[in-house]
Length: 243
Length: 243
Image (cartoon, rainbow over all chains, first blue to last red; front, side, top):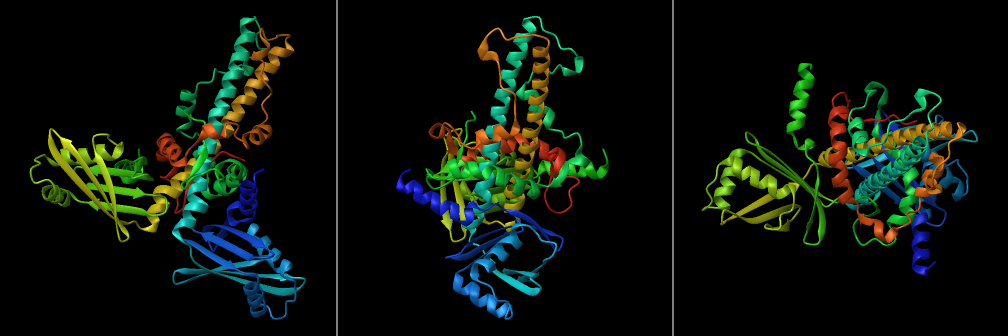
């Protein structure tokens, strides 16, 4: 592996970009959030309601200081504190209270929980994120996912056609199905797309898109790490084998 | 059709939301843009470089006035002017010059072309769009597409499994393929996803994600119109049959 590639991989794997978005319902509103902690550098925290994006970056000294201020009775080494922050923002814990406070253009997320019987409070004091963050953390990953899922759809279509050729061959050889309901229709991508235009179980199917996004981001994220970023000039590159 | 649904359909089909994004390379930079024209209301124009989004809305009187100012010798009825604007922003025309000028936080897109031998110029004077526009026009559609493409992937997986059951049945009945290369492997979604994590033709496959996005937006947009919006409470709803 070239040193530039290795350096990139190190940086990329360690950064906020490598983290998956998590969906949090806070006070009846949907948010996506992600946290990256690093024992030498501190943490970086990102929160969005899809309209605004808020961001906080704290080095280890700032983390220690805030911890002392908010939790004078709480004694723990830095890695424990950072792990607490990571754990409580990776999944919404039933044992933790989450509250949000808008402060002008900023946003404060307050966590309140208990660790070994002792109360532990944290406040993420976030400012409006730079516009580039919305692009880098949300828009470009979404576009990459659309490209990647499109590529997969294309590949699945190819696999279906190969199966059809195999089935056709059996039929030409005189084979028949033992039960009628095992017989499938020949796959046609155009018909498939038309059929998919109307979802037949609307009521059953509706979900918040962001749940799906958070779910699929983790799934496709690995591809992105391998393929999307290293060679890219400025702008979004993606792996796309379509047309 | 209920009157509320019919009203919604009318409003929706007519609006900027119903328009697909088009990818334009302007002065070496990638943009997405869309225009909606209406002979009674004027036009609405949206432009983004994924970091900022710019917007202009003009009523018919403003369109007529600007046309007179920019093209004193050009005589044409309003529908012709609007069609010109629509055509020149729906696809990038070789016969039209496009230039962009940043003006503070705003953006001006200038079109220069010839109509019947007469020079025709247009200037879209855009202001920074409200944040909600980025959400409504870009983020939510992208999330919907991710959900929709995910649902399709799931459906294609089901179709592949049905084909495998049919093939298995032929084999159980003693059928064999006439040529070895017609034989396919049993489809397994987990293996498929793992295989897809590394794109094998990286150099060949790289494309700008926004090309794919513009392409797929039109494709999935129809679903969105039918399914996503009418019953939705505030937030993004999508048709999702996963998990």
